[in-house]
Image (cartoon, rainbow, N blue to C red; front, side, top):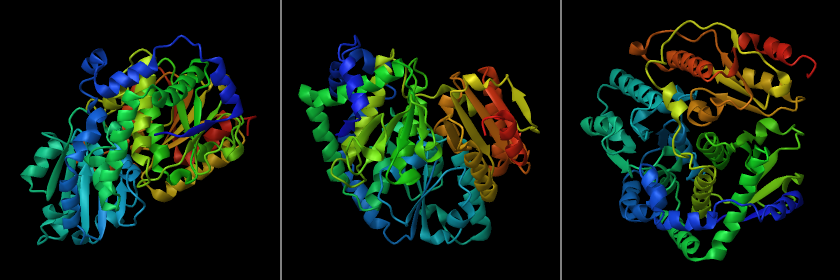
Length: 503
């Protein structure tokens, strides 16, 4: 259940669009959830197991709880995955210092993953089971433990969460992992909160997953049977659609928990990856990096503890009552966001909200060819046509990352242009699809001079960044996008040059 308020301006906007001639969203939602929408279900049968995931996971509760009771002695529970495979576990669990979430851009790998291995239970999470970064981390970990702890039976400290029959599934079975959990197969990663990926960390962190699932199933029944229950949701979907149709498509995401709120990161991923293929696309920017913007076209989505339209004193505001994992309506809030994303894609012409073709292309071995990189600019930069700027950091040193981000935020704070500040390789799985579309963006790919250039056969996390930046360059060129390749050492100089007269 999603509880929201609209600012006065957006309330007036909603009044003016009540007679808009669009598809009957209410009927679509009813048919979607009751699985009577045969055309949609047939077209997207490979992706919509999320609709009935609560019912399926309800049959798995006793097994999950029994598993959790057997692993209580471990000191740390580490979830390793990319994109949704690391976002969803954090989204669904309570704050607990025993739970850690690592993606391929995390610079604390050695400290957290390799230290005290006998006390750690490590979850390798990958839908396809072949995610390059996750495989690399897993192989590095196994090699390290084998060399440094020859008497340690590490496989009893490893868990796999994946699809049945995937590469990771087969590897885990062959190598006697402690446990292998198989999600429903027809569900994309970012639509997997109500699966083993989300519910196992939830249960470990102390959340009553039965209450969470019951909240979803009861809400789902209400949406199917009650037209008034759907009406409130339909109004919000209609408003978002109309705003995007009128080119009010910059959505700034706020949270009372700042950027530590995994709801914000997940929501950004859901919008960027699922809706970037739509004619009426949305650009989801984080408030943390864009608090200075005065652009009138920005719509603010605020998760507010106060649930009032005055939240954050912003004019164009959709204020959503904030739920945290374990609270009464958290499950239905997450479920509702998935319904909204699917509905928006359906209205916009049945664009598939469950795939990310350009991101998948970036994982293709033919694109992952290591080579020497040097500064270059592709396509001319026109400041008057920049809808947003993305600063994409291909850097593996934590200090250098912090320094680059500080430079970016300091230099851009007086420029009224939305920005993304993303770290590779994780952004390839979260906002990567959006950045590969021709939406009037300028992309700055920032690299470190210390990146290695070994080939794919001798893979490690350092040269993986080099291969991925080259794959990114090839795809950006194919899509005729405007980008600059910039050494971190020249970042200040390049920003000053690009925005001379603005800073």
